[in-house]
Image (cartoon, helix red, strand yellow):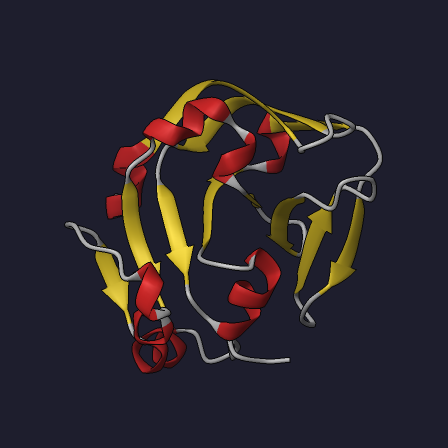
Length: 150
């Protein structure tokens, strides 16, 4: 069993974008833990530190108009076209990487991983007991990813 599986839960989370036009329900299994990325692309997307929790497609229901774009040849990022709230990123048809700020109950989720730690801005240095990797360490394990492009 992978270390991350200890954070997998069943339950219901309800979230929404800033204006309320998009509502997202996670009903079923999801990771009750936050992973953070400091790569240049994620910083530009989030405007700060990019944190998410994962939920499989069968657990996620989306109501409302959503727009998305291909940020790489394998990932799409979704947002509300009315207020601009960032909603999720997905690699193909894989799990949703959902923004925890949309879900009030996700505020209790612990930080468990941090990638591109060496690219974190001075104002976003995270502390605590969590896994971390530099750009070189992460990209060595994931050669298809270059997090500071496009």
